[in-house]
Image (cartoon, rainbow, N blue to C red):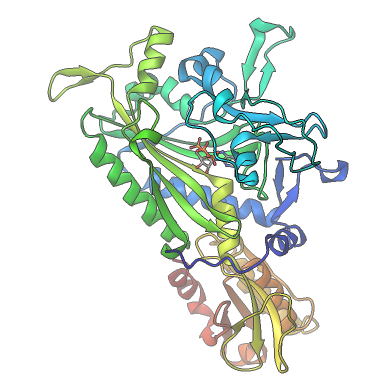
Length: 476
Ligand code: ATP
C-alpha cells in the first residue's frame, strides 16, 4: 500500500510553479497551446538535475553504457520498421455536437463503461446507443477510430508524400538505427548499453494532468543489449537498479510502486514489462517502463534497411541479433513527481517543529503558514542561499558576497539581501533551497556564520572556512 503525500491540490502546486518560475504555459501571451509547457529559471535547473542524475548513474558511473545524441527527425523508414507508422495509434471518439475529441479508453473510464473483449479498436470501444457526451450531453458520439500519434512534417521545399517525415515519438529508435556504428567505435562487448536523453513528440488526443501527459516531452532511454536467453535476469537487474535510482533523487519508497504486465498484456515480442509508478494526487501513474523487447527492433531494422544487425561473440564464436532490455523514463514526469513530493504546506510555531497545515484553513494562534518545497539536495534547483543580516552594513554585505563568490564555484547558489531575514528564509523555502547561510555581527568578530536547514529550520554556527566542506557533506 502507498502512503504517499497527496494531500494537496494540484492547483496550488501549479500556482506556485508559475509564481516562482518552475513551469509556465507555452506561448502564454497568446492564450497557451494545449499540451505544451515551458520551464522557467528554476524549472530548467530542476530538469537539468534530473537529467544529470540519470546520466551520471546510467552512463558516467558505468563501464558498460555509452551515450548517443540522435536527430529528432530521422528517415521515415525508421518509423515503418519500428511499427509506429502502422501501429502507434490511440483509439479516439469524437462528439459531433461540441466537436470535442476523447481518447476512447479515457472516455469509457469517465463514463464507467466496460470495453468489449474484442481486440479491434472499432469493436472494443463502440459506445452503446444512448451514450451522452460528458462535455455537452448530446447523443452524437462517433464510432472509435485509430488515431496516429506521430507529428508529421515535410523535409525540404516540396510538401508531398515523398517528403513526409515525423518528429520522433521516442528516442529509442535512434539508438537501434545507430547500433552498428556505436558497436564498431565503442569497443563494447555484449552485454552493454546505449543511452540517450532528448525530446520526443506525441500528438496526444487528450493532454492532461498538468505536464503529466504533454505533446512535447523529454525521454531518458537506455537500450541494454544482451545475449538471447539472459532476458529475465537482466530485466530483473534493471528493475532493481531503477527502483534504487528513484530513491536516490528523493522519491520515497512508499510513493513508488511497480506494475508488472500480465502475459496477455505484453506486446507479442516482449517477454516482460514492469512500469514504475508514482502516487500523484490525481492517481498512481507511470514514470518509467522497463521492457524486455527480445530482438524485435534490431531484427526489424535489419529487415527494412538490409543492413546486418548481427553481433559476433568473440568468446563463443557465435553470431546473433542481440536482445534488449529497455528502461524508458520521462524527464517531465519525474520532474512533476519531484514537485508533488516536495510540496508541503505547513504551520510553524515561534519555537519547535512545524505541523502539517489543514488545507483551506488559517493557521492557529501563534503559528505562521509556510509553503516549503522539500527537494532532496541532489535535485534542488538552488543549493544554498546567502544572506547578510542587514543590507546597509557594508562589512556584512562584503563578507556575504565573498561567501557567495566561493560557494558559487561549487553549486548554483543565490544571494539575497532584500527584506526581513524571516521573509528571505520563506522565499527560499518556497523554492526548495535546502540550506541558508546568514552573515551577522558575530561573523565579523569570530568568522562564523549561521547555517540553517530548510526542513527542520534548525540553525548551527559554523566557521566560514568549514562551510564548503560542511555543505558538500550534506549535499548527498
Ligand atoms: P502512457 O501509457 O502514459 O501514455 P507510454 O507507456 O506510452 O505512456 P512509453 O512509450 O513507455 O510511455 O514512454 C516511456 C516514458 O516516456 C513514459 O514512462 C513517460 O515517462 C514518458 N512519456 C510518454 N508519453 C509521455 C507524454 N505524453 N508526456 C510526458 N511524458 C511521456
